[in-house]
Image (cartoon, rainbow, N blue to C red):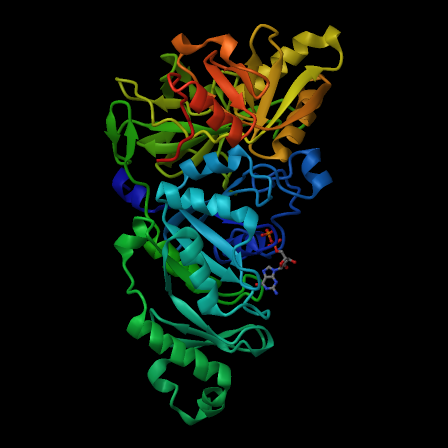
Length: 522
Ligand code: GDP
């Protein structure tokens, strides 16, 4: 098969949702259709050491959540589907955001009884801003939910995105009768035994459906569908691919109902890997030379080995097991045959992989997040991964000063891995760590102790607003307790403002100082 054909077969996406919306159930059901697992209900508890197991850390068990993002792969109707799981916890870490750079589309799972929940807004908005195509699955129609029109309106308002219902539910909860499938013009009946029966619209007039037709829920939904056909948005695949319209599906991951329909339409519409911007121009996924970037580094996947695994999103060419690549940042050649590699599939070690695939390679401590590896004669780098403004800050010190070596080593590696962001105070060289959510601190502290044998103390200094300074404008005398002067890990000067007020006050008093917001979303 040509590279072109291989690339067209790939569908790489992330599933995002608020905890308990049904992401795991939907993933399991999709894997079931993909025949990867015989019985749904085994992904979470699987102890076979396979990749789908994401609870690799004690902390995850303690808190009952999945801290890391895992990757799953399954073949479906001639396609290679790659699902990147993201932690659905309210404490989003940067890890989640970075995962979004490695996918070509996202599936947003929303609990129809609840709608968009506060903590998830942030993540959904990032997808929207990045223009990633978003597919919406309103889950749990088998429970009393909110009005479908109401749910869609909420999405339109919060995300400023058009919605196009691909199907439309008649009733919900105990009164759920099925959905109008607007693609196939069939009514998909929900039968008591969980089966689906497809009835073309023009056959609905038959006597055997008289009872169905008489039900209020059916009639109301029929009217609403007619209204949508007349006055609603029209479907546009271009708008979907531009991230301006989201196809909306109603179903139940658990029943399961509507999942196969969802998967089929999703696979058809979701984009295959596209071109990517680099320092040397655009790279097409079908180019001969292999290239990819590291979006995640994870240590200790296997507690018996202190491994670090770098996750690579392939962007072009063909990956083979024994290839040599160049690490663009250092220019060094790395022979990948010496590193164990895997994709998230039941087929064991991979022989080859293409754009859209995610591979894990053993990291002997040489990779950084955002690194590009390539076979190209002229090494290039992919666009920098977005950084997200840490919102919470803490000072960090070693409990035992005798163990400062472990302390520095741990901090250096975890910062390099992107687990947390580091700032150093001027003169005193004391450390401040910044994170997007509290969970990131917990993971940091846990890993410092377990991987580097360094007990650390974290002291809350609360929220801060970071602004970068031009080195020539650093004048220590103009900063006070409301604005702490620090350096970032690359030694660039940064001011951490206590709040909006102190930031504005500073701007008024020192209009001559340029304050740079590195995280400004364009
Ligand atoms: P996650 O936290 O988003 O991964 O959510 P889970 O998949 O673990 O689901 C959370 C709970 O909702 C579980 O008890 C599921 O059995 C339940 N659930 C998931 N999908 C459905 C659905 O379609 N209908 C109903 N009634 N319950 C569901």
